[in-house]
Amino acid sequence: MNISDHLIGRQPILNRFEEIVAYELLFRSPSSLSSAIINDSTQASASVIINTLSRFGIRDILGNHRGFINVEADLLMSDNIELLPAEVIGLELLENIVITPDVIERCRALKKAGCLLALDDHEYSREYEPLYNGLVDIIKVDLFKTPLDRLYNMVETFKRFPVKLLAEKVDTRAVFLRCRSLGFEMFQGYFFARPSLLQKKRLEDSASILFELMQQLSNDSDLEQIEQTFKKSPAMTYKLLLLVNSVSTGLREKIRTVRHAISIIGLNQLKRWVQLSIFAADDNRGFDNPLVDLAAVRAAFMEELALLHPACKHYKCYPDQAFMVGILSLLKDIYEISMDDIISGLNLSSEIKDALVDRSGPLGDLLSLAEKLDMLDFDGASIFLEKMEIPLVTVLECQKKAFNWREGLE
Figure 1 (cartoon, rainbow, N blue to C red):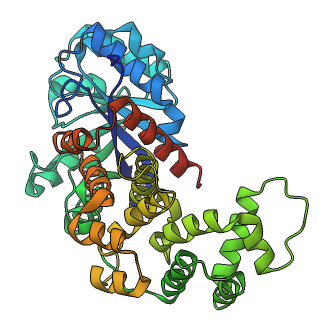
Figure 2 (spheres, helix red, strand yellow):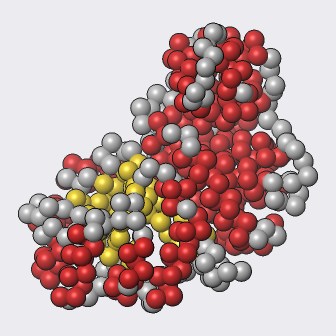
Figure 3 (cartoon, rainbow, N blue to C red):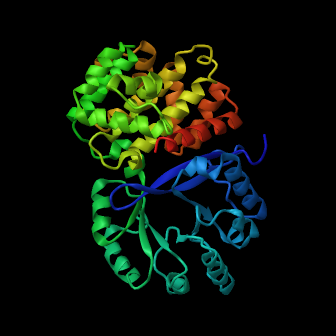
């Protein structure tokens, strides 16, 4: 296996409105999935990062968002870092970088070249003031290392400088709201990345219709039934027409009816859209909702892996089922509805039920692997990779396709 082959994790960075504005990219090498490749920041480490990004394709990972990578002193000073597009990739300077005149001058040159700079896990220090004054754009504050009762004075101190504050390791809504009221403008942490910590909301009418559509599409209902369900909701009909327009650029034939719109988009694509739309119901963030982002990537990733799993790849239905499992695995944490209710209401196959309830069977293995990667548990992920005998290089391609498919939804 080539040294440039690495798993990649991405964690969303959100604004005050809980919309995704960027991702932090996290790398793990095949030789040690639990440890970051940026160890001593040697020239070799710089080359690995460049190769990894080149292998995946930056836009495939990030879409239209910016990405951030961690750098230590050696990598910061390396010419290799200049190969990264400054308009897309920002640099997070790790806390162990010693501030010297050379480092300050290097930051000034990178800033002049258009690079966005951030200080990782940072607390105010006088020696950093040359960076605060126009060189660094973002200061990331680790909430585990900086208790809430110290944040007020820190925020007041940084108001003297032209920087944005990013609260890192936000783990509850209360902490998010507190930091937002203090003046933090960006946020990152398990509150956004772990759906179990997201604020739950009840199943509204639009979401109920989406569930009905999901069941009809899963049961291969006829087109007339699906059409009638759409007609129950003017909002859903409008969204369907928007979907058709967005995926059928250059369509010459005018859309005549709801049924015509469905026939243009196709039942397979419609099924994907309905499944993901459940997450965006009554939420104006749409696909910038971090939960929609997580659901889309997990489902697409599982679909790709199902084509490779020894127990799945010979059965035509498994990729669709894997996609469904990926979507349904997150629903219980969004709505006040139990997994039992979800399962009983959708008339699911035994394979899907077993995967969702017990994480058993081939689909259960795929879900477990996807969950481990979502949580950046690369040690746990490696166990399932060995069990399924799927080469790491192939998993990389599945990750890339999943990221790319999700970005194509916007």
